[in-house]
Structure formats: structure tokens, C-alpha cells
Image (cartoon, rainbow, N blue to C red; front, side, top):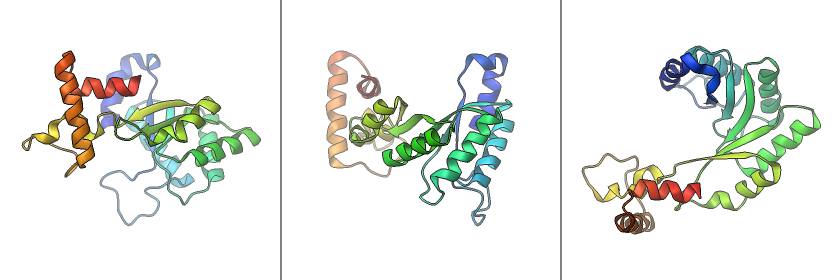
Length: 207
């Protein structure tokens, strides 16, 4: 549904926008017993991209992310499939989301040695509570000149302080004591400087 809405929103000025979407996870409503309706296999890749192009009402995806590593499909199969989509003009650039640094490096090494399109962007969960990308993913991205986009900047809403409000809608059933203490700290800072907790959490990531 989000792809359909997005396609409508940008249709009048399509070339102005860098359009990104993902493949890997099965779409809601698909047969849960169908082994080909998800994962990073070539079959699901091609099916997923064709479906996305139709929903987005466009002939090309600017940046296609592998949504997450499935620990089943080989790097070779994925990179050859993605490169075929680039050569066919259906995708411009390739990205990996929620994938270990060693896999991204392996994928780019394979791409480089076989003259295939490389991974140019990674997407990672990153916020003041979740800093593990700093260990391997960020250094790898810097070394290989890969763009980084972060998700989960407010920790599923935890860092906004709303988990203290029992009536608020929440993404998670509960938050850890450490997370709640950090959220309290951010709320206090927000009162001091006249900004919302969400602004502080997002600006921490930005900087």
C-alpha cells in the first residue's frame, strides 16, 4: 500500500526524487506455505521487483535494498541477480539493509572481481540505545565509500518518553530499564532546551 501511495505522490515529478524500496520479506496476504514468496533468491527478487514497479507506477527503482540477509541464498546468486536488474534498466543502484558487515564486504569483493554493480548504500538500526553499527558497519562503509541510512532513530518510540504513558500506543510490549532511564534523560534535556524528545534523539543520530 505504501508503494502505491508513494507512486501517486511522486508521479507528477518522478525524476526529481530518488526512489528507494526493498525486497526480501513476503508481502502480507501471500501464502505462508509458499517457499518462493520471500527470501533473497533470484526467483523472489525478480518477482518482487516486477510487483514493486507495478505498484510504484514507474519503470525504474533508483535504489533497491535487500531488506535483510536470509542466511540461505549465496552472495553470488544475489549479486548476479541484482546486476541483471541494473543492466536491464529496472534498478539504478543496489543497497543492503540489516546485513552483517562481512557479507556486504564479501558482496562488493565479488562484484568488483566480476565487474558487477556494487552495494552503494546500507541501512542500519541506529540510535543512542543501539550503537553496535559503530563497531564494524560504519568503519566498513567509510572504507568502501558506502552511504549509510539509519532507521529506528527513536527506538520504536521509546526515546520519545511515551512508554511512561500507559495509554499511548506502543510498538513494543515493554522497554528495558536502561532504555527507560535513557528516555527519562532525553525528556529532561528536551525540557531544558525547548525541543521535543524525538528531535533530540534524531539530532543525536544526525550528528
